[in-house]
Image 1 (cartoon, helix red, strand yellow):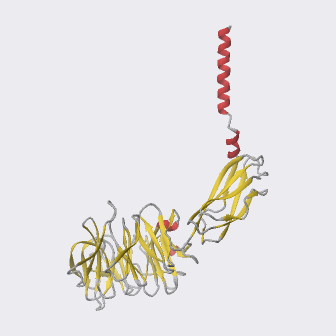
Image 2: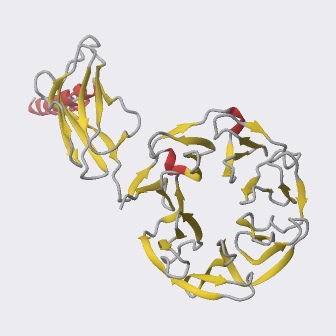
Length: 426
């Protein structure tokens, strides 16, 4: 009898353990009965001192007629203030407070602590906002500008357009806001460029060249450079010539804004496009990608001759005095060279050492009286005369630099979907 009693006790205890383990924790069940969320689907972007309406919703899944919870709002990071700390949701589960951003940090955080009507703390939710300040680098991750592929700027008409993830975006009234251009002609977009008259050109993965003569508000189809479909690259030189490239195909040139195209006898298909320049005497100079040669045309692109270079020079920039400036990977880093005779002789100007293993390249960007040299794995150099360089920003993740019509610097990172903004007022 004692053995039977012990067995019964063990079975009863085991059943209690099993039943207890299967019973949901009341606190966990309470949390699962609600849905909590801020209304904003993306991170709000404002200037310091500006305010936004932080709208919060609580939904009771078990009793949709009773969505009342108590909320406590606090600034969890970056400074700023809220209009009310303690708020109760209405019958629909909605509540709203005004959140004013500070000038302390770029990234700011609002926290709401949620309590049921009995005062039990259920969980915390957070809303992030960006406070765009002057003269600092501001990092954005994961948004549409984080996947930026290219940027074109028209300083005369104050417009900037961005290519990101096969879509075109127009810069809004503020430099950090972007409006998608919804026109089927430019989808899916592959490249974007602009000529000296402000005409914008977009190529698509179908091999079309689309242009806008009214600053991007309407679009028309140009003649196709190639009869077959397939992606192409397009470069617009300063003389407004269009240079079309397709892998393993003859390159093509349009001198009339995409109306007609002619074959170009220049070896561009091996290294892709880098740049085409016209010198003061009318000579055309082409330098393509990573290459050991320059190409020169005296007859407006009809025929070309080759200028051999001593090694693999990367980017080329030609200034207003027809002086050539190259970047080249050598001596464990990147060197900037100058040539006054079309690449027949070179003078070393500046040398930097990017991070080990970085994909070393370099390109020149001009804004007003200054030039910026982007060195992936190192950062950005700044020069006034091409002879003397200073470190503008040492940042190993730098990949490319764009400058919008408001003189805002926008830097693309090599790491993830990251971009940096900086507006200089100093």
